[in-house]
Image 1 (spheres, each protein chain N blue to C red):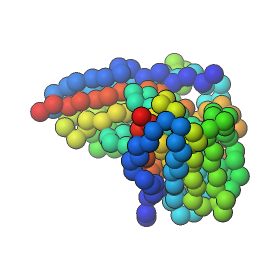
Image 2: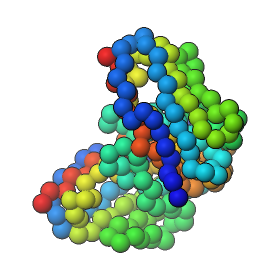
Image 3: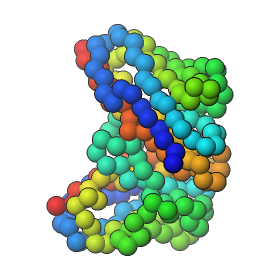
Length: 112
Length: 115
């Protein structure tokens, strides 16, 4: 069974701090790993990673994948209160189709 | 580009009642997904459509849940009869082809409370 484990489950930081969110996975047939941000209801897409060691970057957010050790990290530098959200890691399942298997998410709270 | 539309946004029903949710995906997106997200959990796939055909419904509780996408565009998800444990946010998502793990675009979701 495919597994996606995120840590920590929750995190409280002050504005300006840097945070690292972790996602480890077990899938039989890896194709990609996706990060989403969920503020209220709809998860919004952040990154898709397919290759090890290649950092994806968008503003203060960046992510990298390690296919050998089966994990990914999402970094947020100089956090702002608007970064407060649940960050979800997901991978396409092992079936021939691509429903996403999600982790439980990391709830990040950034306080002023 | 208009996003994925869902309605209603909130619904409160009593157990054993029926409820239906509607989703209109992004124009041109062939693949449509319904996910259930229980509080504190990540979304869990209920059913996946490719155009108007069901691709994966292995995790759909078929004794009470049903879904259709008759014309390959919008979709409805029905629960009949509802149970307390069905309280969750129901998310609809769509993707262009759904064949290569690319990003899915999510709607705002419907928060269902079963009392």
